[in-house]
Image 1: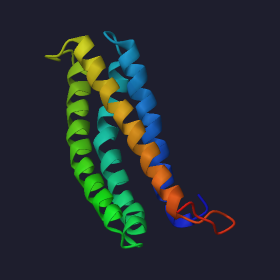
Image 2: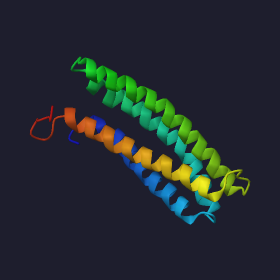
Image 3: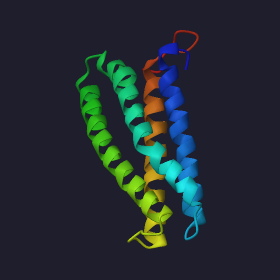
Image 4: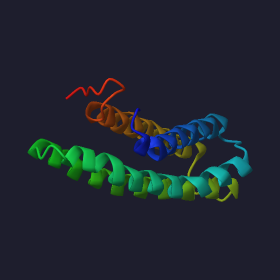
Length: 147
């Protein structure tokens, strides 16, 4: 994106996508994942999701609110609600990863795999969707927007 103010958000999105790749690798390695990798992912997940949400609220939400269109206001309200759901899910995934790493998970490997896959699929969709929203409203190098 040409707008340098979006750089931190872009970096955060890339870190989230990279972490989704790690979660996918952990899911693929069940029932015998690398415990250290589980702990590393668990420790990184909630702070990264929270940081990304803060950046989205600082960068994306003002972009969406600028045109003062009611449908965009509804979109921002929905995205705020989704952030709450994302944080709750990130907490569940972090807890599950820690339990797997300590061999104390009450969940079966299949259930943990399903939880991880559900989360990283949803998070990837979130990142790509919000990135596309930014591209709709932020001018490109020729000062054009899609909207």
